[in-house]
Image (cartoon, rainbow, N blue to C red):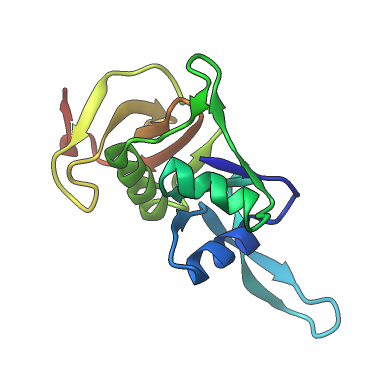
Length: 164
């Protein structure tokens, strides 16, 4: 997990890494942008979490990206262990699936909606995702987090959930 040094450089860093065959992920949303001269609007991609980039690589390769290529980012360090933050593969997969599934109803949230029970989605497009259940305005959501740092949620029928 890394942060870009400069504001709004997430997509540039993502494109640079992708060109070199390095797997990375930047959670993005599509937003309408007005065209002042031509009138109307068009859709553009915007990072959902400022300065956040997830990079799948080894520690040595990560250090080389910054030291050798001068990539404008810094890897986040866990304060307890003083090591680079590593997101488990399953957790990252669940996060990407939930974020992509429900941009309109869910997407990134500042914090979990409310403490809830651990659940597993048993059917539907999110089958196998593990997270917490939350309710908001009578709707049921499954929320997943990456190391209690970033959360995503998706609306889902309660019947699809199983308590872990």
